[in-house]
Image (cartoon, rainbow, N blue to C red):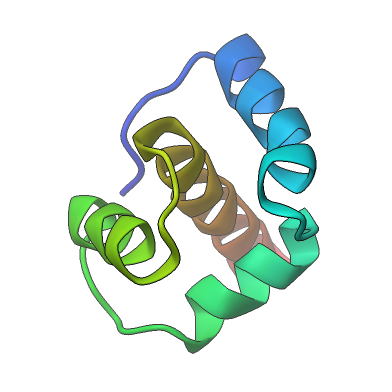
Length: 75
């Protein structure tokens, strides 16, 4: 399961990702979806290594992916 980020920190990190990376959040979430099935920190490391992301951005993306996946399961 996702590592804890405050809601404010999470939203701030997500809001900066498109400007810092040139890619939208939805594009990054598809990348995570298509990536390897790993544990949380392993996914963060994978994103950082494969896509040269900062740790905070990678962590926020994986956290967001996990939140959205959990919300889909509840529907």
